[in-house]
Length: 180
Image 1: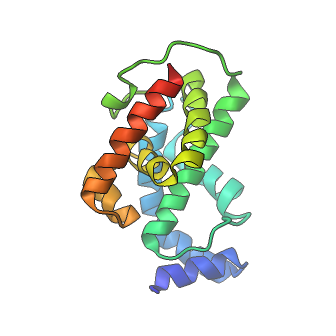
Image 2: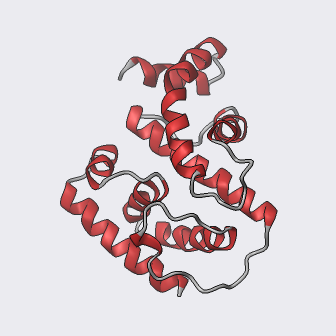
């Protein structure tokens, strides 16, 4: 177990000094993740990466993540999921879910901005996918929401590249079908 993992575990148990040290270490990477996520959030221009990291910290990290952190990659995967949830919560607060046509090429453009209605519909479908195939849902979180490459996703999830590609292909097809 590396020093960061120890610090994060202590921080989640209430050690304020460990929390300060851990945040100093992870903040630059959290900001990169938040920049990727918030660049897709066109409906809320006030949502800067700094605000998203702050919301993640106050709404998710400070109140305690629900899973035990096993290593650095695991923490960032949990952080990405928590930040995605912050975005979904913000979208819910701004709008009600409206049934609108979903762009069939949604997953073919990694930099596409999501309308709040699309984000909410995708979140609902992603929760169903998570129940059906949790590894495929994790691949979507990393590749679609964070913009990770196949290789980066394979490393973060500790999966072979061919399995990540298989999960990505399945998830895109399944989600597209659900959203249609």
